Image (cartoon, rainbow, N blue to C red; front, side, top):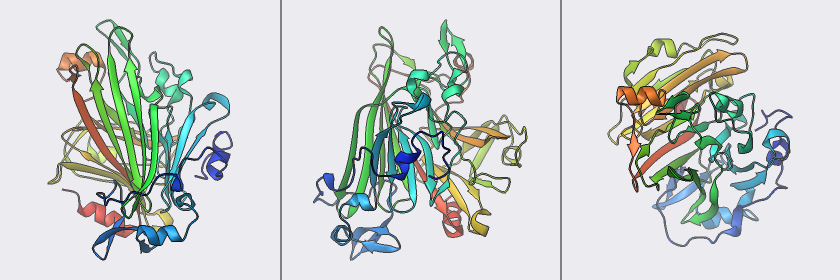
Length: 400
């Protein structure tokens, strides 16, 4: 993650292991054979799933024999940021040994501020950097003053779109959830059969003393050798009455995945508010090429939708990309957003559970989604890196 500036207060923490560490051999090695972990790079050796790492296949005993502890090749590092508006923010760095790593901001809804593959960033990282939740500005468009961009920033849970006043209640841009710290955080690193699994789990509560009480339980799972992870959200209304239920995953590809030579791999059924040709027209910065709209994807036979931002020119033509895979029935609309400006060179490919707008306009249009007391909704997205033409072509072949 060498693309961070000196202002990034976690620069030294990411470069060294001299921080609070929760990884490696601390967990018991599970004896039962489990199903492959999310994002697994699973091979077969003698009929048994194994871990593929550094171009070789390993069973657990074989790999473990080479290292003092698994932290040598893969693990989770927890630490706190120490300066500026990020001071006191708890984070977790996850590295898989494949060259893929990502930063989970535990105090910001467990969103993903940065992800990289072999040192190349996969996402845009904004001028604000990571900002502690205490500095969140809920009114109007104050959300932008702590929006780090990131591989993913979660919008919701009662508002996910533009700021507005709805039935006398003010809603700030994109809602409150991304500035709510996780509680009951648990990090697990353990062998499950011959796969070394790393899992982070936490709970975020968006609540009012007398009104709404909505709980988001997030689980992030990956494994040694993987170039991806799965983010799973379970949202439950623990309040006494029905409430709005709006969720959007603000996924932000950035340089070098995104340049004027990049393209999007997806399968579009219809578009509202723009055209596919217009949205995928990327130009050099600085430019005021702003815009976006609503894209409705096609699903494969398993009900999955796929989208990738790919730069085929990266590495002298080797190619690099980032992708997402998600359940289309749960997240039927992809909200899109584009800026080609200096320092704000990014796009948003944002799966959502509704056609996001202001709460007031959504209610007027009949697009408002609600969740009843005791009801649970589940959302799951796989995020990953595509390295080389072979992987990019394989992803393209999966598109319906």
